[in-house]
Length: 203
Length: 157
Image (cartoon, rainbow over all chains, first blue to last red; front, side, top):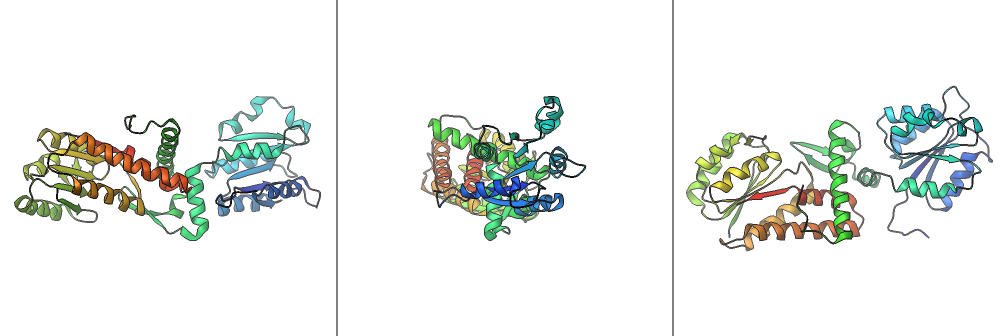
């Protein structure tokens, strides 16, 4: 059972097969059983819109789409939109699973990416859990604040005042700020676990 | 020790200079927290030499700012003042108020023989506890910002 204090991770599944037995739809149902919040879409444009509008935490996309572009192209478009979310590329098509790894070099270098072979012995839920460990905690906190109606809460960054929603738009300034906050959070967790606070010099 | 907070955000350097000049006549051996922004050479348009020429007479001067605070502390420390600063460029408003309150309270409670290392250590410990509590209630963002504030402290004496 889910801890009621923990807000669920939001997963988007993009599989362009439709119908009640479509892989995407079945997977969405499975993940909902594990209390993930799932958005299940079958259209390219609606997938991109849903990701940007809903502050999705994890994306699962079928590599083999029924259109000229495949899941790798979708990932490329996503990254070009500064979306650094963990992505699981899923396929049941041998053509994709037999490709040499260099085919995926750009995808792997673009951010957190994982592969899922449908009908393999690996449980998708295990991959999704692994992907949730790679979600940016600072951005997720901002997204949760925004979703809770706190999008107008203000921050002072240097001499400018920004809102939560402003900060969720990725750009040079906010990316640098996010990195600083992520490092501060990692340092805090490290010190809490090691019990070293006060003994370490600040950076 | 009496602590005075001067918030320079949105104020002109002329006004800040005038306020500091007036302070010169009426304020002695206390702590002064200056809030504002500058550059790596000045604070609110005032260089460290200009501020030092005002002969503030404060025991502790704290720049609650960004890198400008950090750039000022060396000069002040040389004149016998305990100087501290931040290079904390992001503040969520509740964390800003909380950090400032902690700082002011600790300075208010101190006497003139204040030990700078102990002061900094106490404030760091308070902010660490605050950040830890934020983690416990799953407010990761507030935790990150509070810890960022803590890690941003610099001082000299």
